[in-house]
Length: 240
Image 1: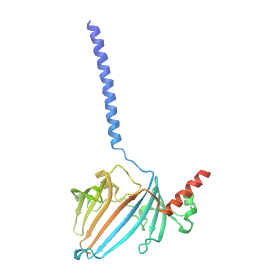
Image 2: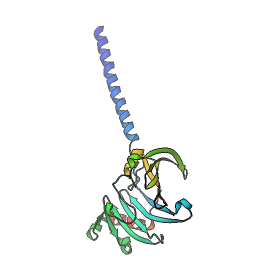
Image 3: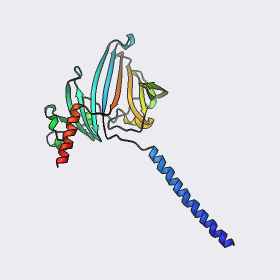
Image 4: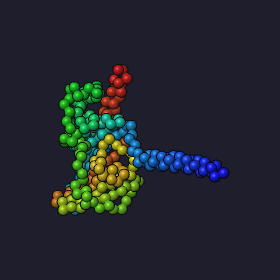
């Protein structure tokens, strides 16, 4: 009888052990899925800046700049840089892959084969690219001295915020909580810390009395120039 009891007890212990392992595995899988980042297949990003001169006297003197129109397919980026004075005119086009940047001849952009662009164009490091979207691996200045402030709502979206106050400037940063990771980021390190996407920076230069806003605006569709390039390359790939 005792032996039967031992056998039953051992069976229950084995069952509980298996159940515990399964439950623990499910918990770890769920935890990993919650932290999993989502990368969209395609889309676009606009970088827009407003510059207010003599800001302490009012926000009447303002200039608007469309800095960059980024278009992506997975990790491939086509950057269309508008002319700062006449944004309807395209100034430059770049193909960006990983840490390298290739200039695309605007007159031949419709027939550019991205997989062969390295044969005709000398790449530059994205960190050294001067025009359009700035790529940087540096931290936000004085980031360690930042102060978290209350959340806010802008354009019907909730944002986490923090601010940095120094002798030269005062800045506020707006992070939209999301697990969707785009192939371009202004400051990736801050996005990782706050679990979201940095979509806006407001900064006031105390010495120059200039207030600057920088906005990152997402969109689902490509620009016409980028669409022609991506579509042509998809056609070339199918023919091979």
